Amino acid sequence: MCPEKKDAFENISLSRRTVTRRVEDIGGNLELQLKNRAADFDCFSLALDESCDVRDTAQLLIFLRGMTADFQVTEELASMQSMKGTTTGNDLFKEVNECLDKLGLKWENLAGVTTDGCPNLTGKNVGLLKRMQDKVTELNPVQKLTFLHCIIHQEVLCKTVLKMNHVVDAVTKTVNFIRARALNHRQFVALLEENEMEHGDISYHCPVRWLSLGKVLKSVWDLREQIQDFCVKKGHDIPELSDEDWVADLGFAVDVTALMNELNVKLQCKGLFVHEMYSAVKAFMRKLQLISSQVKDNLLTHLPTLKEATPSADHIHKYSPMLEALHAEFSRRFQDFKTIENEMHMVSSPFNCNVDNAPSDVQMELIDLQSDTLLAEHFRSASLLDFYASLKEENFPHLRRHAQRILVLFGSTYVCEQTFSVMKFNKSKHRSSITDDHLSAVLRIATSDMQPDFSALVQAQNRLDYSH
Image 1 (tube, helix red, strand yellow):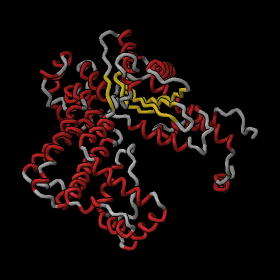
Image 2 (image 1 turned 180 degrees about the vertical axis):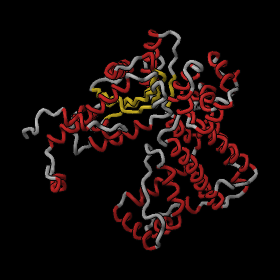
Image 3 (image 1 turned 135 degrees about the horizontal axis):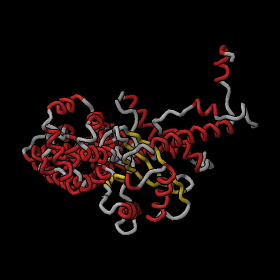
Image 4 (image 1 turned 60 degrees about the horizontal axis):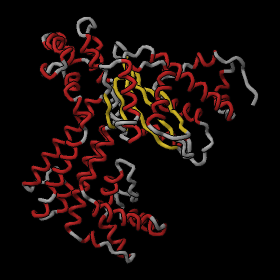
């Protein structure tokens, strides 16, 4: 109807009630599609995280990753559960149970749960995970859930052993002097523009932002001469910038945080399986060992910023124990991933794994698999999901089941963190009256990979228009 007026119709602003109805309808349609898909899941895992919105309502995000018999993966927001009262392990369990019931998911198909390690989630006696394991044990006494602590969160916690407070405190104090006073900030930005510096400004360090520290340290290193000149003119001397040992420590901190930020960004990539994330962590640990051994020999090949600072040989030697302490902290953490390391290796490299280290129920199947040259060729050319989907159920039933329960796991809760950012943008101090149901629908629409069935939505309308 009136195709020549299409642009005119598209430019008509919709009323707030019309927008509200459409958000509700699209959110409801996506939830219905997820419920229909969930009926076909052989197994599924959950990623859980809880945070307060601007009105101090505790919002529990439950993300679902499900896998069908043909290894089709669906990853969606299962629910946002709003909690007005307490947020104990029992309260959280009730919300998770309600979510699973609503989607028709069976507890016995649950493979694992990934959290950020909060006590109300991970408590050994009354935490959510303890109650979830108890629930599964009631239904199947031999079934054990895989509980993982977000691998990105653990990686961020590791940097606390570096003991760089004397560097971070001085950098923070310097940045605050420049940024906290409007005149200082304007004059410093003008100085950078006058000198045509690559950095147009210097940012605050925000501890809750994973990459913040490394970026701030890098910018201070690059601008250290301009910062010192500016502060001297302002009568605010920074003695650390004239201390060669401190400058060397700053260079070391820049290099190490850059390496950790590189790892962090790798772990944030979408679509990674848990074994790929753990492999990235193990590779980082090997890099730490290499750099530490080189530092002992006064080689700074992989620490370019420290090398630029030209520290003395005696000062260089103090960095090797720091790198060893960081490696030890990485080794101490990730125990939950180490528990399933053999199974992850079996699933990711079934032709190279040791049969003796495999679970007893798949050992015979692994021998058959490793002896089949056609399957070996197919494994090299196909994706991991396609390969396991091609295995015949009657020949490899246990291997397929193990693959499903590993590939379906969340390695991190990064998807929850992303969604909380969307939540805080949509429910801000300027839009704090949005209801929990509408916020849930907005988050579902913003995060979903599914396409709304607009044809069904149009056909479901009983009237052409509504009163406004």
